[in-house]
Image (cartoon, rainbow over all chains, first blue to last red; front, side):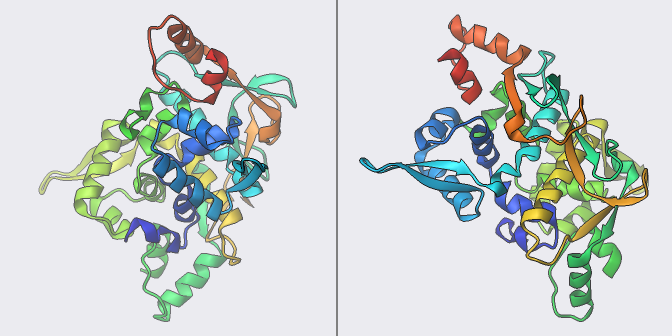
Length: 174
Length: 174
């Protein structure tokens, strides 16, 4: 399988990575969440070539994660803002940050700490169950075939597709 | 800045991406969480070259995310298991999956659904505040300079380093 085809997998992890899985893309989004909007600001922070930055920003605009907005007419200037789809990546950035804090802090403590305005306290993000509110542990969560994968399995069985997929599918189709 | 140097940033997002930010790495870990342990199983699922898979697995072992365990003496065979550091990436995978479900399901519903054994219900993961338990929204969370970044800022001011860093640092150092 080629990387450019991973969005063809019937898998939300693969589909999400087809948007955010390129080098630099999540660092661009980190900066966007910290308030960066302008091309030159992104470039100063990331130190990548204008060509690469332009390509990454353009892809994020095409995918609806950022929107390009004109903020000055003369001269014409644009900035990049997070869309709702982009803002929905906040838990992803916070989760990356948390893992880095816990496992890669070099013994110096966290680079950045987070203050929650709703409760007025310094906090860490915790991934919890939408139903019972308890923290999620992998040993206690069972993945099950959902609607889209069930349809795909039926298509594979009828020979209508031969797309490769991932372990959960292999278990079902055999 | 070169990609290979991003772990030098005083930023937990960048440090985390220095481990999981390569193409295929998070799909390898997805498969590991679904129970895949053996080289040939990873290869069958991902369809990448043996060379690339071997390089990625080796890097994850070097970084302490996977451990390579011998499971047969004659012939000698090994498998890859998630370490504690690797298991701690579970929220990252679940968060990617959730975003893909919400924003990239092509109208067919989620490929995979999750059953929480603790409460006996189908659930979604929600990122919440460790202190008040409420869901985190970016507008209500303020990033602040933590211990490691404070030290880095002092070093920059004293001219002891000129490492580029990210917007939060630029705001502080000016």
